[in-house]
Image (cartoon, rainbow, N blue to C red; front, side):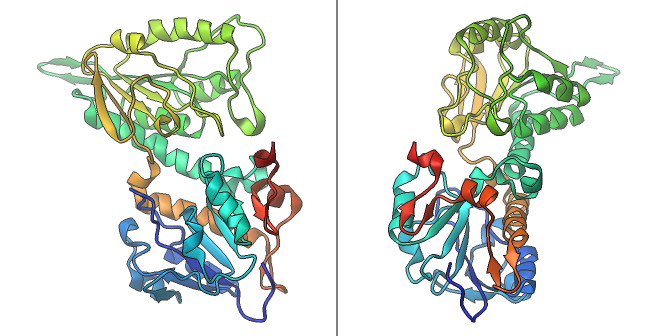
Length: 379
């Protein structure tokens, strides 16, 4: 991004992806960017599906444009990466700051490079202490874990908490959370708040204490040597065949007793691991519900289909291709704060623009100088 005598121009585009209701900046963050000395242009209607009107942006000093505001932009903010064609007129070396899905959208990344843009993938943010406030995966997964339980509770044809009435006792729903990352922890907490009887499992042994701290019961494979499951950045790694076999046996005996199952297991850049098979679904009680949070990456559950409720063996299986967008207002607020926290942390007052350091800059930068430069895409 070339330095200019004018204020750095930040552009906020309306999302074009099917079913995407979030927006990459809110009036709160627009006001903060302007306070840093930037100018902000927002495409008309960009915030409408997140319950933000154009006038709300105008009130804090943003310019509202009827067409794409990329003309003359130095930084383009997005939820999902915009097509390069929408960025015509942006300044040479302009930054694209969004969730860019580089493994699945490699052609688009190549197009950014060819156009001379510097693409910064927010999902590549390193899992380090100083970057926690910039971590879009955590903020969006937190909401997704909550939403998964709410949707499952709605589909479940019974009450969630135990109820003692004059007519008899209603048993608490038994909820099993598979995968205890950010989404899984929030799913546990939400299910507990609703009164469910909650258990959880993960391939990372360190999560056992986290599960217990939320009042849930840990379900772990014991006595299988060498399986800690902790990968780079706090993500789970793929399991060994021995662990997979032991876990399948444990899960099969446990899942048959559950009313609701929430699966959350993802490995960055890889297909989601299969956690629940058709045979295991068949052991569950009719009326049970499974929410597959990994359905967009192939699914943890055999037979799950994105954005559909599938019924198999009397069990309802559901999963959204984009769960966070179903909480668009809150998801936008958190995502936009992640973007502001990122850019403001590196804002150079003299230059009037952000200047990245090597640790975070090299981690998130996909393209620069007309080339793809990120090591994770060059292997």
